[in-house]
Amino acid sequence: MENLDPKKVLADLTKNANKYCGAVNPICLDDYVACGGYEASSKVVNNEVDVISILKDANLVARKKLNELCADRWIGAETVVCETEDPMAILDLKVQTEAPHVIVEAMIIFMHVNNAKKGVIVVNDELAYNRLDKAVTDAKNAGLNDKDIIVSKVSIDGLKENAQLLANVVAIVQNSYKPAPAKGLKGVAIGGKVKNPGIYEIEDGTTYRKLIEEIAGGATGKVKAIKVGAPYGEYLSSDILDEKINFMSLMMNGMVRGTALIIVLDESTDMAKEISDYLGFLLNVSCGKCFPCKVGTKRMDEMVKEVVKGNATIENYNMIKSIAVNMNIGTLCPIGQKGAVPVLTALENFRDDFIKE
Image (cartoon, rainbow, N blue to C red):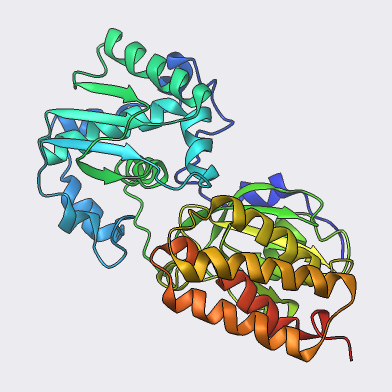
C-alpha cells in the first residue's frame, strides 16, 4: 500500500495531552500564551467554569485508580503532586520537556479544584526538571501563577496524578472537549521494525494495522509479533493486526499503562533470542528477595539460552513454562509477577521458536 505521511494523518486528529508538543518553544512563555496557554487556568481561578462538572462529563479516569473518576477523586487535599512513578513512561516525559507550561497550568487547576496549599512536580530527568523549574518561575513573574508550586526530584505524599492526565485536564477545560473511555485520544509510543517510530496520539479503536501501516509508515518487513506494553508487556502474534486497540481494556488488564509502548517485530526475529535478551534485563532488575523470582529467572535464562543454541526440546519448553507460571503466581512483587508475562505469552504464541522437532 502507499505510505502515508504521519503528519497528514495526525493533522486530522484533535490532539489533547500533546497538543502543544512541537508547536511551541518549550522555554518561551510568550509562545505558549500566544497559543492559548493559561486560558484554562484563568477560567478556573476566576470561577468561570465548574471543573468538577466538566471532568465528570468527560469521564476522565484517574491514573492511580482505574475504576475511579477524577471528578470523584478530586475532593480536596493539602498537597497535590504531579508524578510519574513508572520510569518507562516516556509519554509523560515528552509533555514535561516539550510543553512544560502545560504542566504548570495543569497544576494551577489541580491545586485550585482541591483547595491545596502546595503543589509539587516530581521529575527525575534533568532536562525536564530545568524546563519545568523555569516555567514555574516565568509564569509566577508574569502574574499567571499565584500558587505555591515547586519542582522536585524527591517524591512526596499527596494526591497524585501523572503528567499526561493533567495535560488532558487543561485541554478538557480549555476546549470543553468530552472524551469518554471508549473514545478520545491516547498517546502511544511505537518502535521496533517500523519506518517511522515515534510518539503519536491515536483514537481509541484504531486497529494495530492502521497504527503500523498508516501512522507509523509501515513495517520494514512482514510483521511476526507485536509487544504491547513495556517492559513487561505481552508478545502477541500478527493475528491481532485487525483488532481494535481499546485502551481501557488494555489498562484494566495491566498491559498498557503509563508506558503505552508498542514494539513491532518482523519475521527475522527469533522469539527464543528475544526472550533470552529480555531475561537478561529481568535478571538485572530483580531484587532477588523471593525464591521463585531469584532462582526462577536465573533458571529460565539458562534454559532459554540452551534453546537459542539449538537444544529446543519439548522438555525444555515445558520446564520454562512451569517456572514462568510459578513466578507469575508465587512472587512477592509485580516485577516477578508481571515479569513472567512476556515469557508466557511468547511460549504460547510462538511455540515453534522454542521447539524444533
